[in-house]
Each structure stands twice: as C-alpha cells, then as structure tokens.
Length: 404
Image (tube, rainbow, N blue to C red; front, side, top):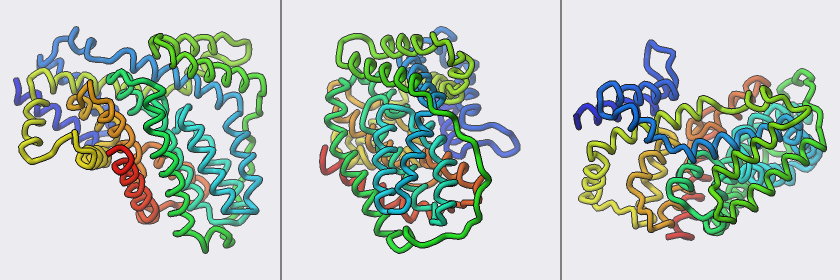
C-alpha cells in the first residue's frame, strides 16, 4: 500500500509541476483531482477519510474571500483605482511607485489574481496610448501583487492554508510579515528602476489599442464592500472562527437588490477550490502510510533542518517553483511544528515571494502576461526573469535576515 500511495503522490505532483499530460487536455486541477480519486480507488483512503481530509474551514474562508473580492470587481472599484493611477503616466517613476503601492496594498486584503485581471487591460490601454513601454509596469504589477499578498493571512491561498491549519494569530502574522513585505516592495521598485531607468520615459510605438468600455463605478456597492472588509478584519481580532465570520459576511453581500447572485458567484474560482480539495486528499493518502515521516527523516540525515530559516526559505522557494506555491505548501504543512509559528510565517513569505522568480511561478504572473498579449505586448520568459530573479533573491534574503 505504501508503494501505491507513493506512486500516486509522485505522479500527481509531477503532473502538477509540468502542468499537463501529453496527449490529454488535463490541467493542474484535473491532475490533482485524478490523484485524489486514485487514492480512494486504490483504497489508500476510504471515502469518509477522503472527505474528512478536506480542511473545510480553509475552503470556506477561501470561498468567502472570493465572493467579497467579486463585490469590488463588480462595483467598479478596481477599475476606478486603475484609471486613477493612469493619471500619473506623465511622471513614469511616480506612476511605477504608485502602481506597486496600490497593487501591494489591495493584494494584502483582496484576491491578487482578480486585481491583476482587472488592472492589466486598463494599464495596457493607457500606457500604450501614452506611447510608453508597458513591460516594466506590467512586471511591477505582478511582482507587487505577489509581494503584497504575503502581508496577511487572507492575502493569498497559500497563506490561508497556513493560517488555518497552523491556527496562526492574524495580528501576530501581520506584524511578522509587514517589514519583509515593505522592504521587498521597496527593493522590487529599486530593482525595476535600475533595470529600466532609461526605458521608463522613452516612447514606445506599439500601436493604439481598440477602445474599450469599462465597468461603471458604484459608490454604494464599493462602500458596502469596504464595510464588509473592515468588519471582517475587526472580527479576525476576536476568538470567533475566521471561516464563520467570513462566510457570514459574504452571505450578507449576496443579499443585494442590484448585485445578482449569479454574477458574484461567477467570479469564484471553482478550479482553485477543486485543486485545494483534491490536494488535501492526495496529501492525506501520502500521510496515511507514514511517508512524510520517512521523507523528513531522510532530509534530516542530509543535514536539512526546518528550524533553520535559511534551509526552510530555500526549500520553500525551490518547491514553489517546481510544483507551484499551493501544492508546495500542502506538502510542507506536514512537516511544520504546530508550536513554532515562525516556521509557518517563513513558509508563507518564502512560497509567496518565490512566485516572482519566473513566469510560471504564480498565477498572477500568467494573468498579466496573457492579458497583455491581447494588446500586442509580449513579456518573454527571459525578460521577466531578468527582473524576477533579482526581485525574488532580494525578497528571500529579506525574509531570512529579518526572521532568521
């Protein structure tokens, strides 16, 4: 049984790392789902054990935050912010700083993927109209969204997993993460400015994009969303279960005379939720036969210790770029000590910051790259890596020096 579980685990994680299976139209979510099914079909887990393996509080929290973020998208808030930022295009360096600050701040409390999805077309249209080179600004958007999302437990999916499974305190987590996040944002700005200082003000002739109509801004709906977020954060400082407060407030948003339930729920990333559930089952099957303990023992024999901040940061970053940050966290949580919250915080920061290394490191990168391509802007792998590698190394160094 141990060999079967190991085979399913390795096949699943290899498929997730590659992103597909030759000859099939399967994506990462489909591969993870098949891995979960295989664990049950091979009787590594029973059906009841598989359902019990899914961390329901984490799924509820993720689902609720997606609904809350959808409220801001449908209210036109993201569009309004992006359009406001484009007023600074006449001063490219200031625009770059303001863009990164806004993307980082919003990503700390709302879904960074939706922010990138909304900002990218607006920025492309405005930057091309101003005849500037859009590449450094788009790389900045993805990098700042990734970095900023590490600041809180609710900033990104991997933080939610670590926060829920590790039962981390919201305020303590934010206090530990805030300095590395701010320093990393400043470092990313300096690196981008150094790499593109001559190109930022230069004119770039890429043709003018077609005019698009943007979602109208609703002050009432934005205010409604802001009140819910403020209440959510306030309740996170109480002893009430985070998932209960989040899903209750998301339910309040559904009680609307203007926002259709179908529209709000249509922005929920069901693929990501399915990926989460499937990986929980795969990891439960992997753990059921004692494989994590054997793996940890082997790593310890090689001198690797998760108590060492440098080791943990390096391992987290490596796994994140091999199999993506969410699967990496699913694996690492099996080894983190419940009584050592610093391990959980370092893992959260390292797996998130590592997403900036290469284009496939995070979904935010891919959203920006694909969105820009519709406007004729191609961000090549090497171009992104030229900025992404130094940004990531600086961010990871910040983590180890601050928390190590």
